[in-house]
Length: 270
Ligand SMILES: [Zn+2]
Image 1 (cartoon, protein in one colour):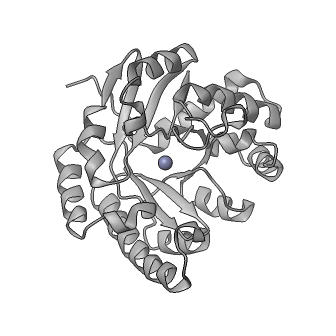
Image 2 (cartoon, rainbow, N blue to C red; image 1 turned 180 degrees about the vertical axis):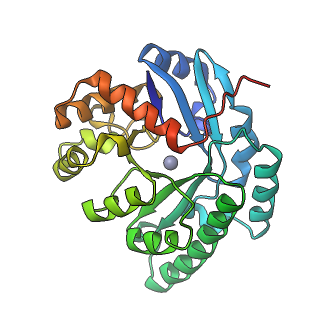
């Protein structure tokens, strides 16, 4: 059994063929998919995706993504707070949340500075909600691992997944110490990602989870195309290769790891 711990099946690019994608994922061995949302407009849609479809179980997570900081409003946190209470027991975690300090979106340093402050405020607000509702978090962190780790130390009870991990070995060890799992995605298949493969070979398998981040982060053969959840099987194969471990072990342990850290309550039970 494979678990895709991070797939944006709620995005519009899957509207026309979501059922086909789920059938393909099922054929590739995928049985569970966590669907993190990125902004308020996706929350209801993500909640509707909870349950079993075409043999695959879908688990929604609700959050405000740092990359879309300009689209979020202050009141979104209050709405998130009430949805987390209303759907208590049916939500896998608070996510996708975090800090993205990459420069790609900002032409000027001053704009990035303003955004950093807003992102920190929004991130902390969501960490507080995770703590309040006793939920794990799904983190998106780019060029901000030290700031994230510093903030997380104030929330020692909060753990979760660091998705599409891009930090160092020592930063990974600090996340793991706080109970986080490290997300391994399509980047592991890229010819340029030798360092990443070395890092994922060094970390304990008990700390790793698999993810596609579909429709983004397409693996090597699909570059430039829409990524899909069945590709998690390819990511598992690459991880097995670079760790020199059997694929079946990778499937089982990484699935167990997702179950351990995210709240995967049976979406089909009343
Ligand atoms: Zn994502």
